[in-house]
Amino acid sequence: MAYAVLANTKYYYITIDNRWFSENRSWGGYTPEPGDLVRISGYLGQKKDIFGNPFHTIEVVSLQPQNENLRA
Image (cartoon, rainbow, N blue to C red; front, side):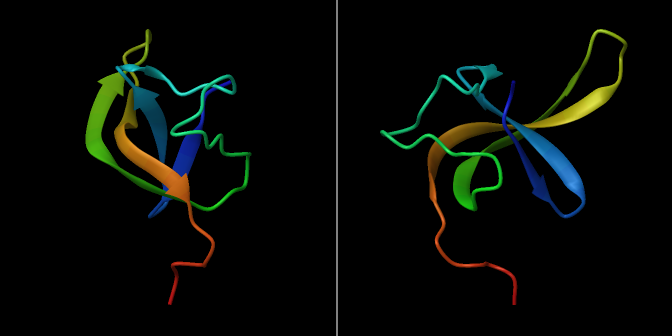
């Protein structure tokens, strides 16, 4: 399982050290659960799967829980 974030109708797969952020990983003691609101800072990228289909990534610099809804 890999974590992904939905933003602006696109899914961004979270990576750390160019590897998937999986269910066995935490960031600074925080391990997000599916559906949690999170605040992520990082670098956006685009890669291709083995079939040549593009997908988006976020290479994490910081990841923390977000307790309030960011939508206005």
